[in-house]
Length: 453
Image (cartoon, rainbow, N blue to C red):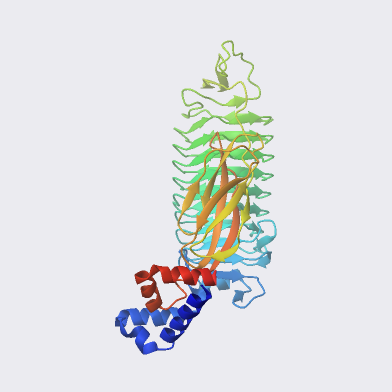
């Protein structure tokens, strides 16, 4: 066997030492491609999501300011920001992903001057930051565009709006964020078809959410506590408010000022001392089967179906026809722990372990984005049990595994991530003529892999 390997290595050496022989059978285009590959800096090779830029690290090529990295970035690039406090007012004019290392320690501070993050382009993703300290008349985040995602951020201590959706923004997703100690957590003006879900609004001095002249939005699975108003909806139509916990605010849910045709059902109203809800307009408080839970409902459930036998009166003749006897509010699963190889080689299958606990001890499944355009969804498994999933990366690059746990009720918990680098690729590290040789003689490639791996 050793003799065979020696002969093989000598053969490879002779071929690779004769460039004219090696490239003779290649077309001009193939020769140019071959040459280009070997003179491209590996760290600049694009992944499926564009290039990665870094802010706040100590290595070469790191930027000291987030705006500097944004200015040099291109559409589809990813900017990763290491923990620290960045006193900046950022303008995003490119479709990028902006990721903070840790939302509690990666802080963008507007220093009391203007908007902290201004998004003026479609398809921007922001996650993993504390965004704070806008000016008195500005906001933590302003969005006037479409198809943006803001998730897993702390948006706090902004003197006016935490997040402002303005001038007809549509199809934005606002999820898994905490809005704390702002004047308004979220304010919308002519904002339609947006998804505001699985957020926490607490300690906002005026409103958790204020929708103004906004249509067809979904507000679901949020927690509103210790705000002045939990939710106010003004002059808006066809919004759905469902599965929210509205507890211990001064005022709960307020429909006012020409608001019509909105649907509020399966929410939980507990101890909002001024009133749980107020509506004298044409809105609906049940979906024909299920209403809401009201802590001051005094009816009975003689047939034991979980629905009160008499309607709940909100104000005057406005009623919830199907009040719930018990609150429907379940906790979200915790973010999963991800364990596995963080450095490896392409073409090799690796095992990754996912484990999330559900506070209600419900079974969970895992929704996994491998960062290379491939996704997996596991079956249901017991809470807190290790689940092994295999994955293989085909191309060199740095990938971010993203995973969430989903319980049996469809509630999806916060995201967890793991960065994985695949720096080695035998086929890609070989000249094109050797790749063609391996295609004709597969057994030679197998021998080489045994040697190098």
